[in-house]
Length: 633
Image: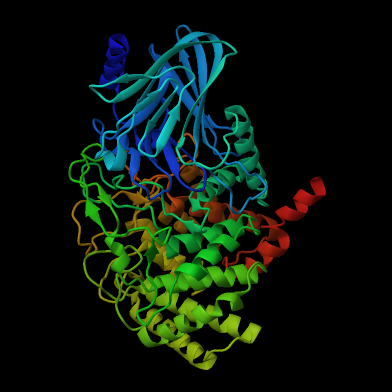
C-alpha cells in the first residue's frame, strides 16, 4: 500500500496538463472522454455529454480527478486511431519493453447505425508487445465537477461508488487518505488485461471486453465506410465525419457543439464556455456536412430531434437547447476549479440560450432545403413548424440581434444574420411552391427581395471595400464569407472578391483567419484565430474561381490538425497551439465542406455554391464518388 502510494505521488508530481492537441477523444454517441498521449483520461462525463464530470483534471490539475494507465518507469508514448474508428491506441516504450493501451466506449449493436445502443461501459485493454513492463493504474474519481469525493465499496477486483462500478484484472488497492484507487501489475509480451467502467444499473449483459472491442471496431468502420467521398482527402474527411458522429447524442439525435466545457480561447483568459449543448446553427451545419460527404441515410435522427424540440413561438426559436428535455442551460461558474492552465472561470450552462440570433433561421431552413434537394427529407413532415417560422421572419426581420458570434456587447443589425433571413425565405418559397405546401409565398418572396436589397445597400462598406459586420460598425466579419456558399450572392461578384481580399489583408495572420477584430464583445481579453473561418475563406476562394489558391490553403490547414487529425475551436497563429473546446464540430464541418468542394470542381470543372450542388451530391454520391465506388466493388 505505502509503496503504491509513493509511486502514485511520484507520477502525480511529474504530471502537468498536456496541450489540448495532445488529447484524443473516444465516445459512444452518448458521451465522450478525452485521453492524453500518456494514457490518462482527464475528462469524462457519465452517462451523457452534459452529465456532471467524473474526471475533470483538464480543468483542475490537483482536484479534477483522472484515470491513468501507464508504465511505472520512464516511457515514451504515441497514439493513433485504429483505421476508420474512434478506438484509440496508445503505444508505450520503456527500457524494459513495449505495451499498448486500447481505449474505447462500448457500442454493442453494429446494425443500428443511426441509433447505436450504448450501455455506457468505458473499456481499457492493455497488451504486452515486447519484453516485460510494470504497469501502474491510478484512478481518482471526483464526482459532480470535483465537488464530491466518492466512498468506495471494495469487492476485490470490483469497486463501486455512487452509481458507478469499475473492474480491474486484479484486486484494487484503496488509499484512504487520498481516496485513490491503484493497482500494479507486470505484463509480458503477448499478455492482455482489461479494465471497465460502467453504471451499476446497466441492464445490458456485459460482453467480454475483447468481443466488445471487435464490436466497436466493426460499428465505426461500417459507419465510416458509408462515406461516398473518394477524393485525395478521404482520410481527413472520414476522421472529421467520425468526430461529428461521436458528438451526436443517439437517443434524441441532438448534436453537441463540443463534448467539453471551459477549455479557453485564451490561456489565462475568461473566454471559457460550455459547449455541451445543441446549437441549432452547429447542428444544421453538421447535417449539411454529413450529407455532402455522402452520409445520406443518417439524417432522420436530427430531424426527429428538431421536430420534437424546436417549438416555434411568437418570439421565434432558441439558438441552443439541452440534449435532453431535462437538461439545464442556466450558466454558473465553478469558482473552486482553477481552469485549464489557470484559465478562469470554469462555466457550466450557457447564457447564450437567451440571445436572439437571426441567422439560425437561415441555417435551419438551408439544412432542410439541402436535405430535400438531395432527396433525403420531405419538408412537409415539419411544415407546420416551418410555415410559422417563415411568417415570424416577415414580422421581425428588421430587428437587431446578437449575431452569429454570440457577442455580449449589445444587439446590432448584423449583415450575415440579415442575409440568412433572406436565404431562409428563399428556401421556404421554393419548398412551398414545389411541394404545393400552404403559405403566403408572395409575401415571403417580397420580403426576401426587400431584405436582400437592404443588405446589399446597408451591409456594404465603401471604406472597407467589403461587406461589414453590421450596419452600425465599420469592421470586417469572416461570417460574410458564407454569403456565396449559402447562395446569397455569386462567389465571383466583384463585391465578394473585394470582401475576400479585405479579409486576407486584415483578418488573416500566419495563414489563419480571425472571426473579426475590434468589435464590441462584452468580454475582456483576446481570442485566437477561428478554425472554421479559415475553412470558410477557402470555400469562398473556391467559389471565386481561385481554386489553386484554395487548395494550397487547405493543405496548410490540414497540416495544423493535431497528430490524430482533430481540431479544437481555435488556433493561435503565433504558436500553432489549439485552443477552445475540443474537438469542435464547427471545425470538422469545415474540413468536409472544403474537401467535397474541391472534389466537385475536379470532377465537373465548374464551381457551384453548395446549395446548387445539392442535387449533384445526391445523384453522384458527392462528386461522382458513389459511382466510382460501386464500379470497384
